[in-house]
Image (tube, rainbow over all chains, first blue to last red):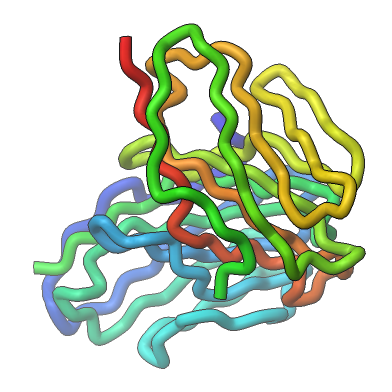
Length: 113
Length: 114
């Protein structure tokens, strides 16, 4: 157990649907990051939150959104799903400075059919 | 854009040391050098990080060049479980800002032969 909890582990849904992925960061970490990894692709940074505020956006589609709640857990919302959204979605948390490592969750595998 | 350069792949024999190189010629004074690894179908795993001095932990050692433009991750005795993709990433030191994000490149795929 890395300390970062992601639920659900697996999700199968149909095209056009909407899903929510949840992430609980490691205790004490204020920053949460979301990444997408498609089959045989690299890790793409999606979005960063720090203590409830959005801090940085990467390659996140407009159909995707995220938020971080007062208890610091985060949710990634994916809507109007397409086949190409099938991927592993990872959440990571960290103290927000370079002197600390990221801790990643085990990911949510999303399959869009 | 990844600011580091790594070989696409490397091979090692089990129980031998492995030296994984990384070039980061545009590193700034506040950038930390981070290494992560990812096993198939798993989330990335933190390995080690450093700023200027060489670092050791239970997993590996990190050797940083004096000019900080390159670094080497050293696995002292490779095992089959070390077969993974290894990522060398620069992480900015700003507090809560976007420069602190980890942007992953393609990494080095390490194969370990028994």
